[in-house]
Length: 158
Image (cartoon, rainbow, N blue to C red; front, side, top):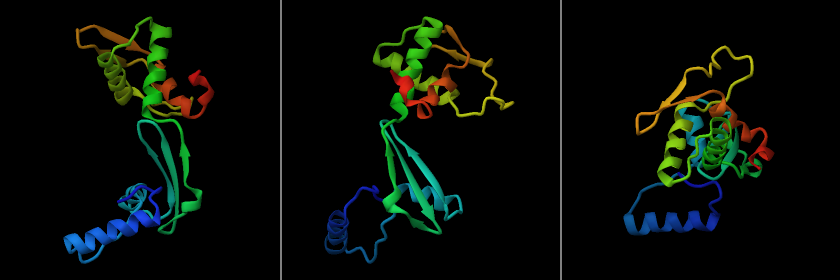
């Protein structure tokens, strides 16, 4: 599995090392996000691979990655976490600044953040209660869902 940005020379060097030094009989290079698509039993789709600092959007058609159409989007999980911290501070007056407090925000993001349509009956923001390490309960409303909206409205980051 390789990074889609991996050049042909890099692949050639990796192949040479694998063949000559490790006596590997055969290799196949796959673009990482495509493996997710194939694992779902599909060969055509749009793969969105989000990391900490960016997202990669990878289109595939009938098993082929459309490499010229791969797009990098400069927002990722860290941006959601930072925006969630701002929302919690402005809406609830609870400030998360230290690295351990940022980890708490990351846990809140992982537990409660989601994309949903405005009229989605599953979009119930009233049960978002997070227990802090000191036992306090933090009652969240729409902050986790709002934080993910930076992908739709990147100008909200400020």
